[in-house]
Length: 301
Ligand SMILES: NC(=O)c1ccc[n+]([C@@H]2O[C@H](COP(=O)([O-])OP(=O)(O)OC[C@H]3O[C@@H](n4cnc5c(N)ncnc54)[C@H](OP(=O)(O)O)[C@@H]3O)[C@@H](O)[C@H]2O)c1
Image (cartoon, rainbow, N blue to C red; front, side, top):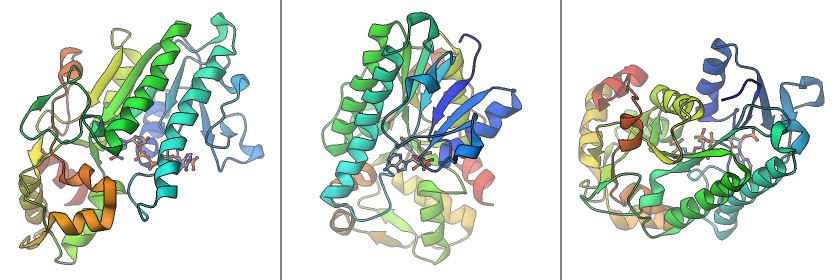
């Protein structure tokens, strides 16, 4: 990466909440775009509408890190929400690439790291999945495929691109783990569907380090799975979480109930994705919390 500030969207989110302090520890200059930034917070905090990036804000940056998007879970799975989930990722990534293209070549960032998700792989049973595996089916697989295609357009501008296919990020402060822990603490913990589906997870601190690796390692290009090296089944996750929280896990949410609650998004929890971090491992990544028990204990005990 050349010297210069990093343009970051989604800094106010779950991942951004740990990533930004980590970048600051390295004295990295930042341009943080947010829908809630105020004019008096410039130049580090920059207001945007969540879609249209201003080329001036990207001028002479070292990299762009695009993490923002309407949360996939949380709220009813209405058609309007699905549209927001789609547009906040696809339209914003297209606009970001256009904004980079509006700059003279020597003023462009040399790297774009853009979020994606293991939802790319759909529902694949016990098949081992790595970055070379083709996409699956369903809403999230289509979303991730389109999202990565938009991000890849930046390569035509001479900019290196990495699409981070995040597994389910485990963090005490939000996301899936916070929701599950709340249910388990109320004694409502249990497997989802058959429980045999593979659950690709990543501890938030490892997700942050994998993001830094994507930014700094110029050999990395294209998709990069950001997952723990040890995927587990939903049954393993349920048992481990019950143990760490010392709560029973006797209940089970049948697949039809999960589908009734989440509609097309249910596949993300019921679908099976045995995803490996092949490219990150080959690039020398190490995981601080690679085993589930340690990751859950670090966040919840
Ligand atoms: N967390 C996970 O388990 C996980 C798993 C796989 C993939 N990912 C992907 O990784 C990225 C970062 O994840 P995260 O969990 O940190 O995200 P997050 O906390 O849900 O959201 C990140 C930021 O997106 C912005 N945002 C929210 N709704 C928006 C909308 N309708 N339009 C435009 N911007 C909106 C918000 O920033 P402002 O309000 O500051 O604008 C928010 O802080 C996301 O794209 C997510 O899809 C996450």
